[in-house]
Image (cartoon, rainbow, N blue to C red; front, side, top):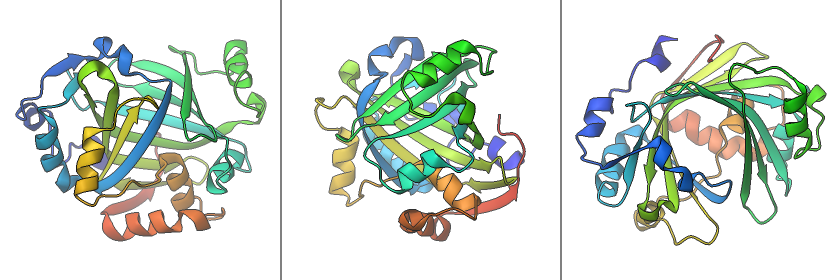
Length: 270
């Protein structure tokens, strides 16, 4: 998949280092790995990223993972055959779940991750290290069953994602900002991909009681509004073709009409 493996024309490892961010090793940012948090998301053209990084460099540090500032992430999402978890999100159910494996390519770490959105808007996140084991063994079954009402035996692979990520951390490590780009979405069941080359997804992640985000305040001053966005839900809605998606039509219309993209047949994103 040449398009997703090529570095964007707008940003490279070398150009990112020229901004002069102070760097912090991934092993030193554990305080910013919030397992109970408030998330805010924004989508922008990747061409706007230069201005955002320039304004952030005096406030945030950039995370380095095995010498990489924009490592690649592969994820595989699980759902029931009738896409119950997707539909819970679409129907705005107050409590909903996402289940995925995530492969951090820079460190070669693999986790099974379970995210729960509770009625207060907080995101609870649990994860289980997998190593080389991605099978449905007893430990994995217990992990899923302890937090999710759906039986592990009902789950199947539905969507794969691949993207590059820049991670910024605030002073005191009470906020993490992730910047995702080079996004590939792959519908495993229907053998389809869509690639967004000029899309930038920015997410602020902080404890519910942390002070407001500098980047979020900057976006507010610039009239950039927070957006409800889920890679999993958007990927299913765009690629599946035979699933309820009325509530996602505004974001789908915005993506397909304002951001360059291309469709291909599916190859394993992992």
